[in-house]
Length: 298
Image (tube, rainbow, N blue to C red; front, side, top):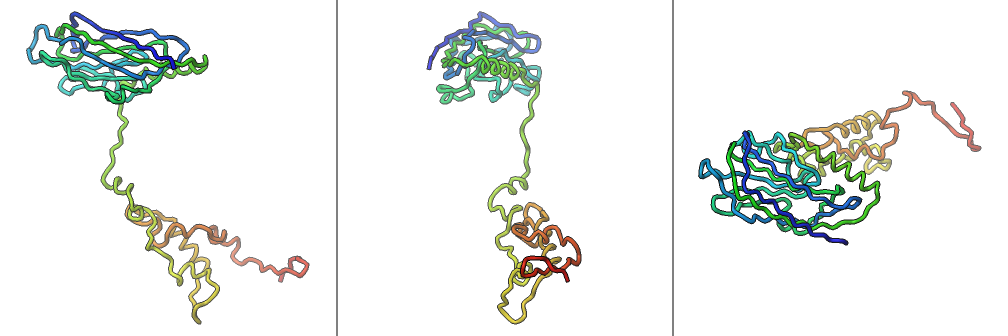
């Protein structure tokens, strides 16, 4: 294990937001090539209180900080619906992001930060990358053409590096460069209904599973397999009736019904092949065997 501490600052006397209310700041930090770098710890500290030069006194800009192997690109996704002209970076859970923090500039006070991973996890992070550099990306969002001053933010990053083969390093850099081509719009959630939620919980026999109380009567299908009568007259089943019972067991019902309308699905297990596929011919030729094993036909 070879730990290295990188301390960096971003200090600007003033920044001017563009016509859409955005300002982008980037800083590149070079690392050694041919290594797998593990970002084990990230700390962000605001050294000064930003202030607004001109404009409404209650205007409080938002800004986001992203640490990534490659430069971040603003997406088509909104940060705040009240400012539709501002577009945010990708989500913190994206593969191209190792650390992300959001903040809101407060009047005469330090900014209020939220970060991903959380403070507890970021103190012992395990995100790794192969690129020989890391970028600090800052995106300010506010009212267009406003000027903010006294921007001073400090960073401390702890890296653990390990020498890897040329092949692993090359493939890792290639994968990260592809992941950096972030999607302009993301929609990866899945909406479910109450009925679907109920169908995925126990007890399963209530929502599409086997019903334990659904059994086969001895006088029905499995009575065919009993060759010892417990009474003088025993009801027996034909092969056609057995096949119909198996077909019933294969039919699916609604989510609150059993697998088969009349038979449980395990009825089709361990059946004779003839019951599954039907007789080979309607009147099979009877076979008889002689004492020497030869087949005799009548």
